[in-house]
Length: 86
Image 1 (cartoon, rainbow, N blue to C red):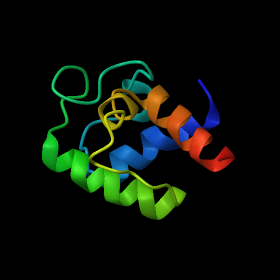
Image 2: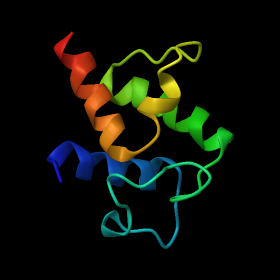
Image 3: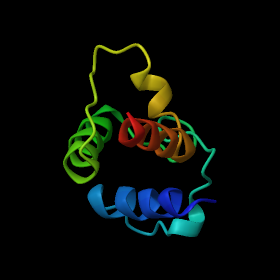
């Protein structure tokens, strides 16, 4: 697990006020929505806005890859790293 993945897990828990969820409870490859962590579309919107502010990345809801970027913590970390490198 990368430090960015750990940071993202803590950020997700804090941003979405996930009670009774610890960083170690979230698998980096586990689905964030529906199955897995069980987040919904409202969580996606809230998380997307918070990620844009914290990591200064641009998330275009019309981009066909957005769903893939938000599929797991690992995918989010990869997306953020690629945006920072761009």
